[in-house]
Picture 1 (cartoon, helix red, strand yellow):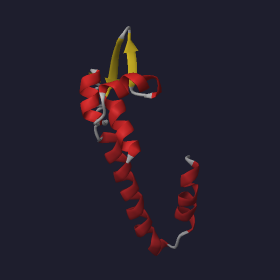
Picture 2: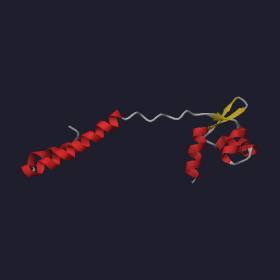
Picture 3: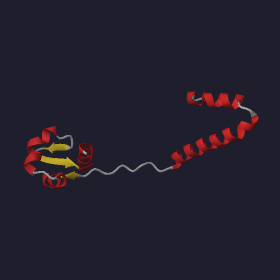
Amino acid sequence: MNSTLEPVLQAARTLAPEALPRLLGDLAEVQATALARLSAPAPVAQADEWLTVRQAAQKLGCSTDYLYKNSASLPFARHLGRKLLLSTRGIEEYLRKQK
């Protein structure tokens, strides 16, 4: 048995009989919550899109020169040969952290 449930089991063994209906109701709520979480669809991961430097600069409100000069320190920037691409998910996370 899960160690977090040991106190509940002990309570079931020792509670006065008139307190048991309340305990059963609480246990039913826990069970319903667990079942709801199991049957809920898994969150859909948002597809990542790779932006050009111009598109990313518009999204970030900065210049393309800034992105080229600072691409090595930007966690959402990737070089593909000579081409620089920037991750939309990475940009969104970066902007969230900046707030």
